[in-house]
Amino acid sequence: MISRILRPLALGVLALGCSVFAAHAHPHVYVTMTSEIVFDSQGQMTGIRHHWTFDDMFSSYATQGLESKEKGKFTREELQPLAEVNVTSLKEYDFFTQGKMNGKKAEFELPVDYFLEQKDDLLTLHFTLPLKTPVATKDIDLEIYDPLYFVAFEFDKKEPITLKGAPASCKLSTVKLGDESQSKSLSESLFSRPDPNNPFGAQFANKIAVKC
Amino acid sequence: MSRLWLLVGVVAIASLSIALAADPALAQASPFGAPRTQLAAPPDGIVGWLLAKQSEFYRGLSGAIRAAKKDGSAVWTLFALSFAYGVFHAAGPGHGKAVISSYVVANGETWWRGVVLSFASAILQAVVAVAIVGIAAVLLGATRRTMDGTVWWIEVVSYGLIAVLGARLLWVKGRALIASWRKYRAGNAVHSHGHGSAHANDHAHSHAHHDHAHHGHAHHHDEAHGHPHHGAACSGHHHHHGHDHDHDDHASAWGHAHAPEPQELAGPGGWTRGLSAIVAVGLRPCSGAILVLVFALAQGLFWAGVVSTFIMGLGTAITVAAIATLAVGARGLAQRFASSRPGPGMLVLRGLEVAAALLVLVFGIALLTGYIASERMFA
Image 1 (cartoon, chains in turn purple, green):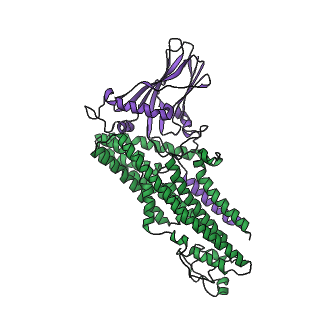
Image 2 (image 1 turned 45 degrees about the horizontal axis):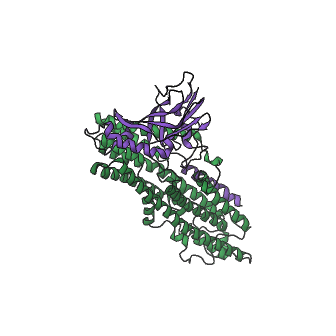
Image 3 (image 1 turned 30 degrees about the horizontal axis):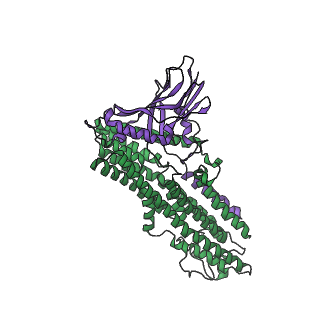
């Protein structure tokens, strides 16, 4: 008797539950990036230099209301306060960059040499993330992505990653671009404070591996 | 019929609905400690497709605005894209479909009110987005950081209102559930003496505020009681399977004389109550709309951005209304089955309402505390 009530009711609730949670946000910021893995003269990796170009909508949103001599055009100097704000607030997101050196988690210092530039109405943020201590390493694994997928990172097709000053033995072994996985499994997660083992955006992670 | 079973049923339904709805929400939030379950994995294909479409439409918007700058007729492309984006995007978080659906279920709202709530809140969202960009960017020349700050405050207020709405619903619905439970127990106690009127009275009360009563639908029980039953409304057409056991659902002894019950106060009430839901949901502007507006402004086509925002709102409203309609249907279904088992059925229905009310509260709190990420813009 109870089951006569429960079954349809459960179905109803199921339908409701499914419909209510049936989708996910999409990114509101699209970043096209190139990254350099930087080495010193001893062949030790010292850090990563990112060049992130934002999409047109976000670029104009970011510069909204900023003072400039020429309307809609911004010089590097005029954009510097904004660059400052960007790198400061990126800290909260660990610069969307996770690294492992020889299997050990990489520790990064605060960004240096950062600036924004505007080209064809698009903003590009340049910054270097120095490693706390340079390391001679055989294996470098980097992942660049937003776990919540509010920011979509995509490598530049032409020149995604360069090794700068790397010992000749170092080779870029894998580059997995985020969008390759896009058509595959998309698990559901509307929610922040992601499960570190399974964040939503991880499916769109850009993975880089360097073997020396 | 055993009360234990009944209790199990109510608890099962309540926890099922909460688990279904809230589990993905809370699984990742360690304070609630729930492990991630299978339920969190939906059909990949559909979600993936939705996501891809949303992104595609969204990314097309800026190109359409640029094109419209050169060729006026391209605004039609912009408007079409805006509509499509609105329809698809509403499936994402932050457009109140969860809150509105839960609200509709908890409050036993009609289909029409669900639709009106959906449209009103979507249009309000568009108005708020236009107001923010219009005042902050166009009139005051504010920077995006000022706008971010404004949106942040609006979000806090909106989420707070959702939590308050949920708390209020929970209070009313919780009391209704307790009242139903007490009556059910009282009814059972009477039944043990072989008399069903107290229980039947409960049923009449519970349904009195619904209006599709079927007068003159006589059958053998009515004859026995000597008068027809109105009021057993949501039971609709279920009386043809004659119950011949002691839990019958006919308003007999105390008939239609009833004092206001908590559930009546909470029923589809005035528009004032609906307004609270509209404001709570509609206050928070869509990030996409703000970006489009600012971009349109930068391109010197602010008006096109405004029209696009309202068209997006329309698209959003259609999706939210469709989902709210599903919710109303689900509740209707529950109600039909509840009425086929008057005593316990009513309890299950009240349990469902409490679960839905709880859900609204949980959403509000989760949004406020950041456990549910709404759309976020870059740093």
